[in-house]
Length: 314
View 1 (cartoon, rainbow, N blue to C red):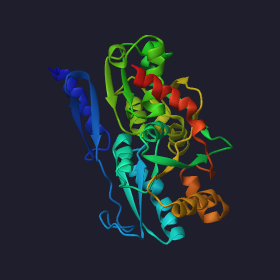
View 2 (cartoon, rainbow, N blue to C red):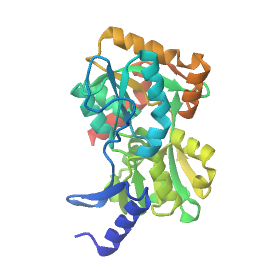
View 3 (cartoon, rainbow, N blue to C red):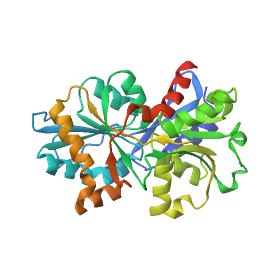
View 4 (spheres, one colour):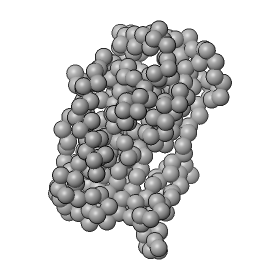
């Protein structure tokens, strides 16, 4: 049975993060792992009706590396830009988990998706989609995982996280799950045996907020999201310390359905590759902290693949 103290902590945690937009649920048989249940789908009006599937509609999914409303704010102009440049209606489909996006791609329910690199490895293995492009920022096509804690935690490195509470983002997240699990695996531990409590937040900015408010001792987050929060809202990370930085991983890619006609794939690839060439499009990219999109190869994701393969071996 879950203790009353733990239940109160969990409910308080879920209530603080974007009050009114989330709930919580436990995982049967594992008392120290909880999932914060943010809204599964965010429907965007004014682009296309969600169930209006026709030849003139492009179904695009977004894996939420940030909270649902933040993701909508970041991607709204991108979707309008795609709609204008293709002459097609665009339906934005936002799901809580990366796995749900992969499942939709496998069943041909989406045409294009912005996903995480860990989700890409899983989806390619299942033949759910194919790689289109990846973003580039400041001449880099890579990002890192940051392990963070709050200033007064007394935690100086990842080893100090033992018997402390920790936030993952998503089971398929490279920065938010696969990397810290590899650190534990290399040291001979499993997450549930190492941490006193584990929470899944399903968004990197939610994890940052939990740590900032000292409601969780540590978290693993995407460096791109962390740096964006630090740039736009520095007060949100003013009491946070980065205690570990991973190696480099290929940027979260844009992928397309394997069922999409080659002509459509070519048109979409050209659209993304040329997006940085006009001022209005560059402004849209800047909101996403992207300088331009570039061609990528599956081999670019080898460092991520090694994390996934290690996870599957356990």
